Image 1 (tube, rainbow, N blue to C red):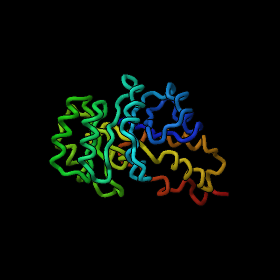
Image 2 (tube, rainbow, N blue to C red):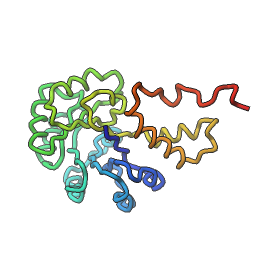
Image 3 (cartoon, one colour):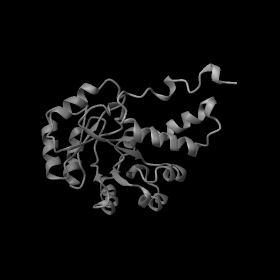
Image 4 (cartoon, rainbow, N blue to C red):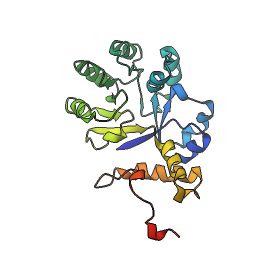
Length: 232
C-alpha cells in the first residue's frame, strides 16, 4: 500500500519527505514547492476539495485545470474537483468538464452514483477515490461496500483514510496528520531532546513500515515509551 504525504506546509517538512510519495494540493500550493517536487519519489495531484469544505472558499475549476496541466504524465494521478458536502451533481458536472481528473465516491452520495463513476474510471486512468465527510470514524461498512462493488482493475485511493488501511482493496491513501504526529512526539516529555525535523523522520519511517505489521500498531499515546523503573 502506498502512502502519500499530504502537502508539506514548510520547507523543513518537504525536506523530510524527500524520496517519499507526496500529494500536492492546488488549494495549498506554494511556489517554493516546485524546488522540491523532483526530490519526491512519486506525486499525486489533488484539487483541494477538503480545504474547500473547511474554509468555504470555492476552488476555481478552470484555474485548477490550467495548473494541473503541468503534472500530466508526471504525476501518478490527478484528482477531479469533487464536492464533499454532498452536492454530487456538482461533482459529476466537474468530472465531465475536467476529463483529466479521476472521480471520488463519498458517503454523502447516492449509492447508485457508483456505477456512473466506475464507468468514468474505466474511461480514464482506472483510479477511484473514496471520500468520507468528517467525522470519518465508524464508516468502514461504507468503505467496504464501495470496494466490494467495483472491478478489481480499479486503483482505489482513500482520501485521508489511513484508519481503514486494513481494507484489502484500498491501494493508496494520503496522510494529513503526519506533521501533527511529529508535533505530538516533540510534546512528549521523554522526547523533548528531539528536534522537529528528527520527529518528522520518525513519523515518516513509522508510516512507511506500519503496513508491514502482522497486527495493528497501537497509537503513539497508547503505549509508554519508558517504564517507570527506567526513568532516573
